[in-house]
Length: 164
Image (tube, rainbow, N blue to C red; front, side, top):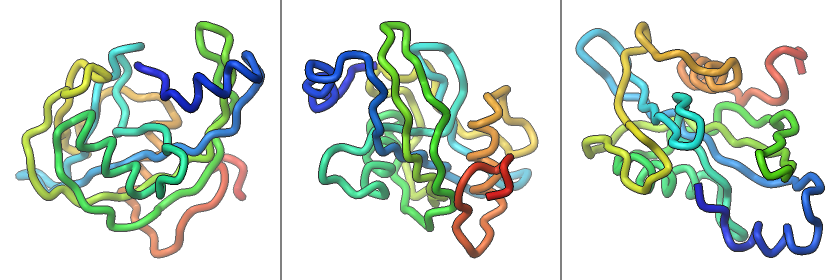
């Protein structure tokens, strides 16, 4: 996955030290024949299945980043319904030693149109999956989907496991 230019410039100054970045995760939901379906992509870097996600560019609003990432990664058009979860990820250490922690904005989105396919090389596959038949995902990615599907009226704040 290509690293945004602004991060490359920051890395020239801070090396591998932890960066605090903003991220957006988009859980796109649509009605299916057997109930709701969720848009997932299979990442090209580690083959894992996830909702669409990405880094918020400088000056970009997180909800706009979510919609941009949906279009770029899966060629689907969606509308943001609401922010369902605001949380901080664990410290992530990449293969090259770079460390990052994300303030993740998880949005529940409504499908508008388009047939999903992996458009930008960041995904191997893209498609809608029935809620009752989702592929294996990490605990964190499962939590993003669960919070979006629960669709409580208040935005969830903090880590789900800590009771925050």
